[in-house]
Image 1 (tube, rainbow, N blue to C red):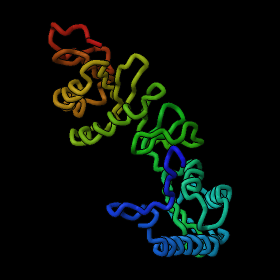
Image 2: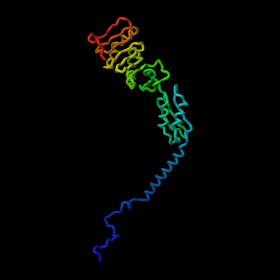
Image 3: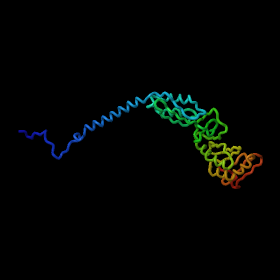
Image 4: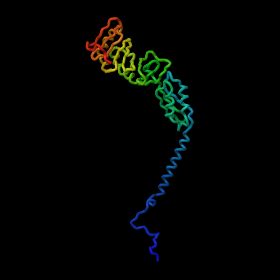
Length: 266
């Protein structure tokens, strides 16, 4: 007789125990769902293969003056890898955007074998320094233009100041038109001092401090004088606390500023 009783390996499950996890799984349903998913994946792959035809046509839309159509088509051809279904539209767009004078690009698939490329050309809004061109958003899109339209306003400033100079010009030009003047240029020097140039040749010195306040004061107080006597004036200096001074084109000079403001600020 064994010291320890032999264990009954075929012991019956206690009545209070339910079915195990594996017994609860409905394997037929799982198999059916898996079959459906596998069939769907197979169908998707077959459909992708059927639709992934080579790109045979490039449909370019847009109005161009400086961008050449063959240049766009060549850029698209260089960036297309694979068929129409798998082509990377972002890669195509980025490649076309690198062409000079191209502003914005939108690329669509046109089934069964074409890409539609919508291109917007840059519109120059101002000159930048000697040979650069800015768009209406104040972005420098061309640094060394072969031809710079002389009728564009002339904006100047240190490297990286394009947006700030363009903003002052865009914010001020409408107000100058209302005052009967036309703003032809804005200059920011290396010390951070601002100067405006009017279409009649008069320069307006705003300096580095309180630029918006000085601009408002020019339009309110000095603007009417410049409108009436522009031919006699070389510059208007607004770098005073309350007034301004005028540099006349003749030898006689008239200071239009309070006595305590004999020396301009920065």
